Image 1 (tube, rainbow, N blue to C red):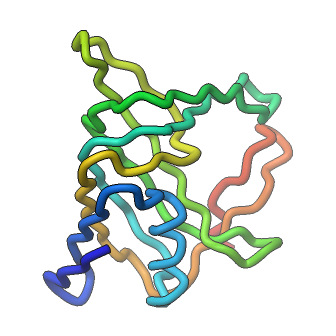
Image 2: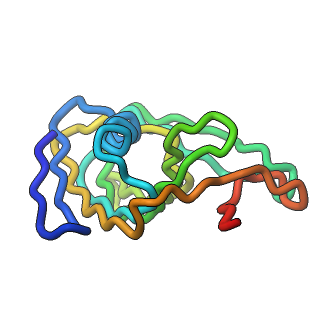
Length: 144
């Protein structure tokens, strides 16, 4: 992983072949005291697991794809789990297939196939936590 700091709130991150996208970002967040941030990602990935949440059950259907895909767009936020005090990266991605069709979903994890470029914008050094919202059965931002 290479990091290029653009300003006090923005940096570019280059993830290299075979690095895990989510695990690498979680490590970076812990080591750099990121409290709340947004991410944008493009690149090429493999061994990707995507999720689709089933209504208000809060349960995800997971599907894994071993073959290389173009990471056309990834948008997400970084907050913290209120119960475990660990980073939670919530990222949705669009992935391009070799036949130019597109799939997408919640990114559980992916391995870099060639390279991934990430723009990290720090919104706050103060941690924003996610906690379980029983109305929708998902961990949502808790601004209290």
